[in-house]
Structures are given as C-alpha cells and as structure tokens.
Figure 1 (cartoon, helix red, strand yellow):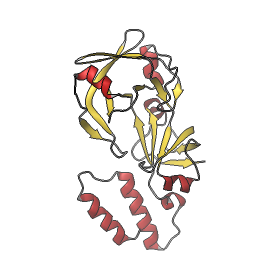
Figure 2: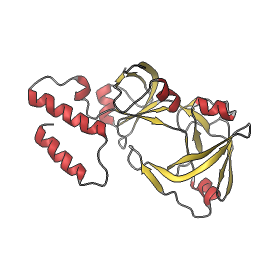
Figure 3: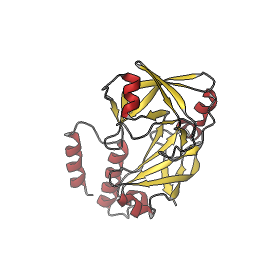
Figure 4: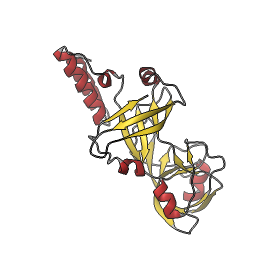
Length: 237
C-alpha cells in the first residue's frame, strides 16, 4: 500500500461510525514507510493483516432461552461495546455467577449475539476463588464440563454444563492462514516481548472468512506477560 492508498483508507475509515484499531493504522503506516523508502518490507509488515492481541476477561455466552429466563420474556441483548470481531459485542446485560462454595461473581458480562449453547469462560484464578474445577477446552466443547447457576433480575437459570477455561486461540481469515501456513485446528505459538516477555505455546488456530486476525488470551495469561497496548507480539509456527 503506498501513501496515496493509506490516505484513501484513512478517509474511508474516518467516515464510518468507528475508527480502525490502532494496530491496523500502524500496519498501514509501516507498509507505506518501507515502500516509500524503497526498502525490503519485514515479514511482519508483509502480512495481509495486522495482529491484534486482546485479553478476554471472564464472560458468558447465552442462548435466547437463558436470556429470557434471566431478564424476562422477549428480552433482547443490547450493545454496550462492539468487539473487534465483526458482529460481536459486549452486552449491557450482566449476570451473577454462583459457584460451588456459594461464592459469587457479580456483573459477569454477556457477549452477544445469542448462541446455540450456554458457556461461561473463566480464568483459573476465577475458578479457584469460586470453587470450580474447570477443564481447559476450546470454545463450544462443553461435554462433560461442570455446570453453574446464573442469576439475573428476572430469575435464575441453571446450566447443566458449560463452565470452562478457554484455550488461548487466534482468529484468522483464510488469507492470514495462507500467510502463516496453518489450517483450522492447528496450533501455533506467540512470542511476547517486553520486560515480562514469554512464549505462549498451544495457540489454537480458528479460521473463517468472517474473522479478523486476533489472539485471545485470558486475564491470568495477560497479567503474566504484562500485556500492554504497545507490547510486541509475534505469531510463530
């Protein structure tokens, strides 16, 4: 992308309701600068899309049935904040999660839109505090997982299963998968820089045409590497 292309993209994005993620802007600038200077573009800048790494705090995904049980018949989730993946949002609605020791987490955020199954995603620190013995699972794989009780303003909803710690994972568009030479269900690693730098292994690859390139780690992992907006991160095979 040359400087003229970057200016066009900047104007196009500024006319929309939300600004592009800072990683996207940095990616455009990096490509334009190297091309303007006539220098070889580093591999990270050659990637079709910038890498965004986000910490996924504890949250839940609910069916419409569960939402209505908790908030009332016909209730629809409302948008609190749009997330990086297209069409995904943090809802204004939150619930209280009741653990085995009768300890609770209040204001557990619901992520929308509604799904076909109910799932609560916690970090191990959350699980220990509540008394859960949760497995490490990919999202949607909830067979044999512990259940829980949720409480909302309209009543309770009992989950027979669905409480997990989600496997760290990377969302990829097929263009990204081709660039990194991986496929759906593969595993990668992510090297994190900074004073608390480390390498996360066993990063599950999820590929779909609707996905933007984004890594999700949980709060325990984010705290361990002191992930900040300017922390350097690199996907490796």
